Amino acid sequence: MSDSNKLVRGTFLLTIATVITKVLGMLYLIPFYSIMGGEENLALYGYAYTPYTIMLSIAAAGVPGAVSKYVAKYNALGAYATSQKLYRSSLIVMLSSGFIAFIALYFAAPFIAELQMLAAGGGEHRWSTEDITGIIRVVGVAVIIVPFMATWRGIFQGFESFGPTSVSSVIEQILRIAFLLGGSFVVIYMVGGSIQTANEIAVFAAFIGGLGSLATLWYFWRKRKHHIQKMVETDKTDYDFSYREMYSEIVRYGIPFIIVGISIPLTMFIDQLTHNNGLAMGGVPASYHDAWFGMLNLTTHKLVMIPTAFASAFAITILPFITKNFHKGKLDDVHHQIKLMILMLLFFAIPAALGMMILSAPLYTSFYSYNEMGIKILLFYAPVSVVISLFSVTCSIVQGIDKQNLTLYVVLIMLAIKAAINIPLIMQFQTVGAVMGTGIALSIGVLLNFYIIKKYGKFHFRSLFRPLAEIGLYSLVMLLVVEIFYYVFILNLDIEQKLNSVIVLAIAVPVGGLVYLIISFRTGLADEILGARADKIRKKLKVL
Image 1 (tube, rainbow, N blue to C red):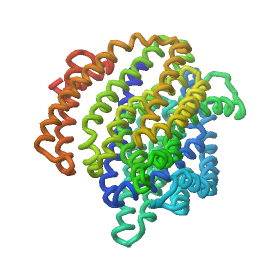
Image 2: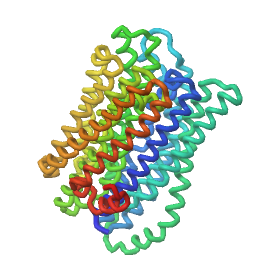
Image 3: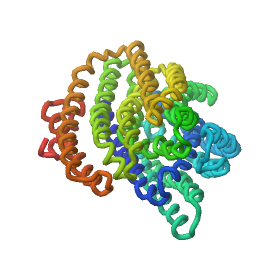
């Protein structure tokens, strides 16, 4: 199978798995929202997850991505024994780092909670420092196993095998959600427990999901271990790196992965530290702060992560291929893969974001309940999903062309801009201002990445102009059709009612998607981007 076919196949596998996990991660909020009783009670969940995500990235130390890149690089050189030596030891290192990170987060929890409470500003708040401390300590248990799990996935990806990552991520999400919903329901409705306890059960579900993922990866490893061992036996190279040399290279690879991995969580953490103070300085009563923060960091964020699901799948898939071809000096292949990844990403992300904008009211109401502020935040957050996606993929491309050291400066500049403009924007535009701050900061980060790719990867962006113009045009046609359907619906239905909103989505989303696909396939745009897979899709969907 050619690299292009492997790339497209791997991307589709991971995209399908990522979309499934994101959709499940969005759908579970409907019953969870009802069980917990609104955004304010969900805010505690959000307070726990951002520091957990940051600590998780630090615990992993960028090793999963670095291992993927390292294995891909030395496999391309035929040095399979070198790859094996690295990934065996990396699993032990990651399990150790998970324990250390758990202990660090456990003891740091009171300080993190106090920092968040100080950032929350004055007035009455639903949650205390002790509440936040407790839930951070509970979710921290997952830090023990998740870096190990992520590194194991990275090993498979380095061998250009994306099925184990795809299947294990879906199983992880199913188990997590089942435990989360079942546990919180039992606590509140069967044993009369508190919202605090229900939130703690909900975040502990991350550990249960991680165990399921590990079991899945072990199953795949048993099936493929024999094949990998055969590859090691064919190694005729004389590479003999010491552990010190290997981990020096891993650290060089890993630090940029840490920086990129925590960049989005850090923008969310900046929101945590500035959101409530910015609202207070803007004259918003404290009674709104926690509910609006829950909308920003949890309810709308979960919805926006659907379009960005494509980005995470593409970023994981593209790295081993670009790394391999770059080290082999095949720049034409590198350029083709960069173009393919950016176009495939935007082919899906742009229409998804525009559709989410126009349907923000029924979308938010369907999953939660009608809320003008939540709908307004989602309206502005939807287009930012495209920028988040581009930032993730372009950072991966920069790492693939061996300029990972420059991603550190890009992320630092992006975070500095976010921190500088966040409070003024929140004071002026309330919670929407935090979304604007994220969009502006990430846009600058994307432009800097484009410059690096152009200068060091010798990539010419002119080749993207025509297909991007087509994607934009066809997305606008789709948007017009959806707008007409939506206008007809709101004349006859009250979209403040959950059932009516579900009906609107059930009709408008498939119609909009079908219009976009028909135009894309009939004009040949889909063939240019998806290649041979477009014909397979066309045969299955006769209307195309």
